[in-house]
Picture 1 (cartoon, rainbow, N blue to C red):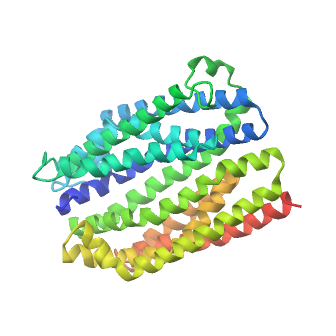
Picture 2: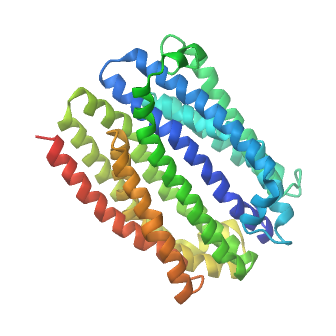
Picture 3: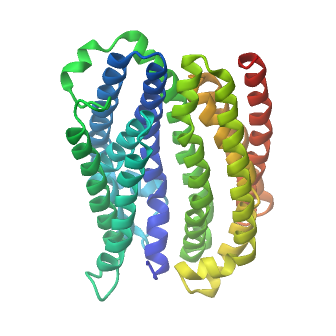
Length: 407
């Protein structure tokens, strides 16, 4: 919807901050939902409710704290993100709505979705998430384009904020309607019942997942800063490429998170054979799906970039970026599936190992190295090389889990 390279660049520059939301989402969403599913497998229903209350209020407090910090350090943050005189106003407008105002609903609706999914209510989790996405699609042109409110990047941020509020409200209303029939709880009185063991169980999975996303923020910020010297068109092209890359990434993430409750439940209940069958079934489906997406992307990259912005310069940049990114789809899905299994089984150390390898050992050093020898166009190769290595490591570690747990 944003037809101005500067407005598109503004959205790209703020992306690392909104990506940081996932650190909180994983801390309370992944950590809590994994613990809830394992408790369900053990039929420890009271502990499920306690964990869910901890996740809800932890996400709420974190969202408010996130907004407060961004408001307090707004100007240094804008500088850190790589804004210049050309992109400052648009970036500040988008940051205001998506982060300063929108951190709470953005975090809370995702964490609630995790918790609803953990007890098997995948339909409600999908409806809640999709309601926000669909509303965002409807509101974007109204707030962004000249025939509407003509707010540009700020309008895109406002549309996202309102959409997240609606999604968040859906889950709150759902919990009220299903009260007594759901293990998802917002009862503040349950928090004193939280034990040190439960906190360790949640944080043991949530912290490594959170660290991974914080490192993702670092990597994305570096990527944007390496791209910034080439101008707004290059930044916009990188941002569009990243958005298109998000489609297969979210498909892979959806599969890895979708099987987590089933894997956790079967692991905790002792049905290891079914656990293995679930993982292998998901792997076959997701690999075939992303192979198809790889072919589609590689053959139709220019048309996909043009759908976002009809600029020959941006299409030229974006085509070169996205073609390289598309080669890593299959490796990406294997990596994500392995991490999802580690989180489901409570193997936080394995997930942390992947997070450290992904960014600190591989991607971030590769960004510096490749940008030095192959400025700008070498940047997407850092991600591709990282995913190839991690997918191989993931397969090796999954095979070890099967040998140790499945007899």
